[in-house]
Image (cartoon, rainbow, N blue to C red; front, side, top):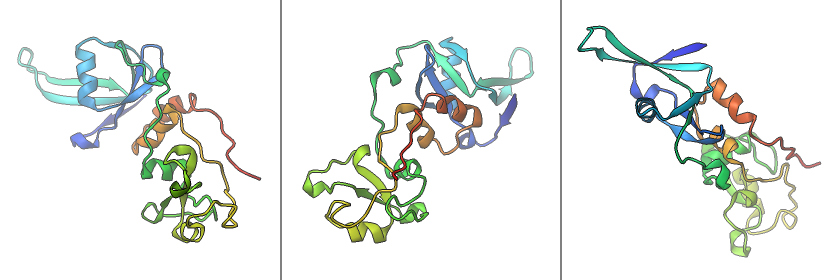
Length: 197
């Protein structure tokens, strides 16, 4: 078990909240996790990493107060987001991570600031703004494709766009994911072969 101790509140990693059946629900901050511990809503813990919180001194004993929070907690409540088939929200950052920082037309590796959201079927031609119709693209490919389909523009997709499930989205949504959280969520993510040709 590796412990994490931080002094700045914003530096604490987020906690992976599961439902009692072990399916992921959401990321929560340490304050919400503490509340769940104190209201005895924790069903079980699954992480190998602990976040240690230190407070002031106990009034009764004079000893410093401390609490360890597990990095993955299952909660007894009505959280069942995974089971409801939630479609994760589409954002530029998550799209960039889903596509590995690559332009899915030419394969160039891009900086986040240079990535553009490219609609495979243009919106003006009925294409939707959804996971299965968008890819990360460089400015050159996006400009070349313009208001055409990839075929009309003489471009080929290097990989198929897909809608991530909640486990994949939670991985994409947390910039400071801990290794045990990543491993837990990867077991719930489908194995995909997106590569074309």
